[in-house]
Length: 156
Length: 302
Image (cartoon, one colour):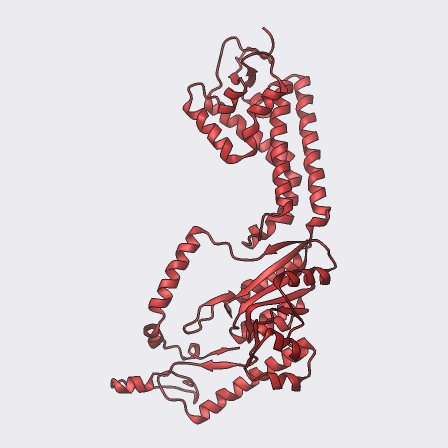
């Protein structure tokens, strides 16, 4: 079988997907975004968090930080899923991203992760996942990809 | 997990971490990290625990002082702009804020919006520069004290006031009895002393002679353009000009504004609506009649 091509669908259980997402979120939040978080805390958030102060307007730094965080998050999932078809969370939960058509392309990986830059969009995507039987997100359907559960004997 | 996967994960994490790290460095060190703190002083000034009859304390001295302190401690804040729109407030709260302004290690500019009189002007006078509109109301250097006196109303309804006291003046300024001439003189002397301190503070802060401030300190207010001629303010202009002057004093060309104000959540909003209703319904004449703590009845306002 060509790598990444799905022959027999063994959809990933919802709970495993949620746990995988939480693990990835921890990796991103506590390792990758740590410097940005510290800078943001000392510069931008300290006022609003410690003294209940609201900035007059969204400062340019906040916009830059938000965009960088969004790009880093998308890049994390896109690169890992393109290169090894898994993220850290998916490896630990024994899940894998596969293409429904041919080998997984970078474009497919990018499209399937686009909603991760925005919490409301991701929320809608997850709602779609909850109401579908296969527990796949809308952008997974759009990008012709699926998340499957690896069998115990599968060493991938 | 194969070694290939492991090295891919580590590589991706390290690269993204570096991107994150370099971005944070850029944000911390770039020119746009300069900030000007805008601290609003709006409404009646007082300490949080102060109760002024028929007035609500809007500008708490504790909060404003904590904002000034925070702005001084925050290395990204280069200057402070006091956005004043207040008729004044209690003496101690105004003086405390003025002292905090004087102690600031960063340039402080006061912008007087519609009104900045009495205690609010005291605070403004402690700043490095005062800017106001030509029609703003400012000055009013004076002290006023007052209370409602109900003795005749009580008399009309056959209610008498019995006072048991161990000190001769313990019930001075009691709303239940007429003030004697002697008591009036005592209180007047205290007000004169506060007035004197107010004048001294303004004279020192504004680098004016005590005599010239005394002449202005009749309690009368001045329009911005009159105040400028009298040396009570420095420049006539808008808030934008005040921001630019703050930047100039801080030696920076670019800065973003950070406004210090209390965050209002939904529960605070509901509580405020409740508090306002209660204030106007309950804190009116009826509640004033119930006040028995004499010391709280006399409020000295600057």
